Amino acid sequence: MPFEDVDLGICRGRRFPGEPDRAAVILPGAAYPPTAPLLWFTREVFSAHGWTVVEIHDLYPGDGDPARWATERLQAAREAAGADRTAVVAKSLSTLVAPYAVDEELPGVWLTPLLGTPEVGDALRRSTVPTLVVGSPDDQTWDRAVAARLHRADVFQVTGADHALQVPGDPRRSLEILAEVADRVERFVQRLDR
Image (cartoon, rainbow, N blue to C red):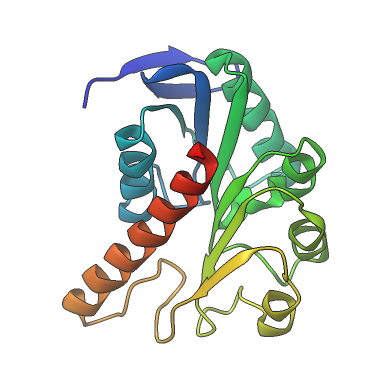
């Protein structure tokens, strides 16, 4: 798929062109870049539905406020996309952007969100726009009690998976999980397209 490298001011990005009125912004995890499987295939789903996609190609440096770091990158990508509608895709550490995204009424795909962090769980609970939350009860960052209170969100839990939603030592099961997540993302995007 063709893309262009973009300078977002505070970091590098990649823009995959699609329809100009709707864009998805992909935010990486602390050590999980947009070229990693979950984010790669999530981008593929949005692109297949004609969305413009802007990926953030920057990893959190480990110092400073990670919520601010993620929010600044989301804001820069939204500005670069210039779309009327924006969806956010965030992995792990970048899910700290949830309070901002929910306040802005941005639909979102939240991959292995830090549900144990009150700001993330509270924001996702009050979201009134389409929200897909994906994680594993076997991941230490997942909080079953918080997940159970996300009544308006589509919550997809994968048992036996780690924080990358992979099953160590079982690549076939890891691929099955990846396909299941892609199916959920497909349904999410179809909902946005209605």
